[in-house]
Length: 310
Image 1: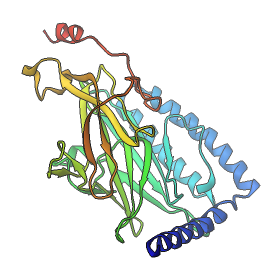
Image 2: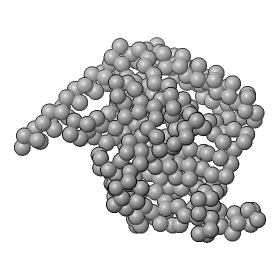
Image 3: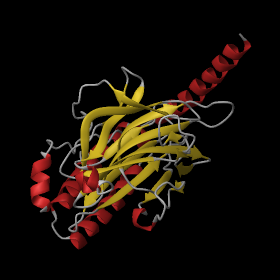
Image 4: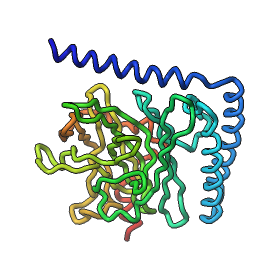
């Protein structure tokens, strides 16, 4: 009974705190709203033109221009309340408790790799801008399972967010599901953990089982597979799990050659728990592409890839 009362008290406190933020963010004036709508049109044009540039130098220069204009728009008082829903090339996710928004996007480079960009916007009572810029340091991260921060970000374009509530006075955190174009042969998807500690972003948390009932845990989950195929990675509310395609090589001899990894038509998943995400194999689900995966491609037959490899 006492435990339930404490939980209710904490929940009430959170509602009051974030309610005050919501009230502050609603102070977006008609003038500033009109300004943001105008700036959004300009931003959408710059973003679209960036993706139409063929050479890397021009594409990166135009993206730098986009970043500057985005920051200028975000400096508009109470911009946190604006959705920027016309920026179709940018993924914008808001934390369910309204504690932050995260912007992420990518640039495809001529060598088949990708560069990722992002920033976290924090709400403020006075409506002034507070950002945590994210620097994609993928090529400098020697251990992809390392705990990282905003300056050393394992870049991805996030398309889904889930909160994990605090436990035993430990801080709450967020699960991010992301797409990560990797090379001209392979694509990655990522299950990432984001914790905000005094307005600093920390990525990764040792909670994911590496095998069923294993005591070995990892900080993030990275899936790598053939760029000619698709992979489902999503939160499935019907089973209350993060579910994903089980990936396997076409032939046992192709083990660890990820350009030949595809779904084997089975699903695995993680059961969400604060201290440990338990791995469960062979979940019964319909193998449809995720509606949130804008990079879905029809599956390519194994024989097609094998012929191209020979």
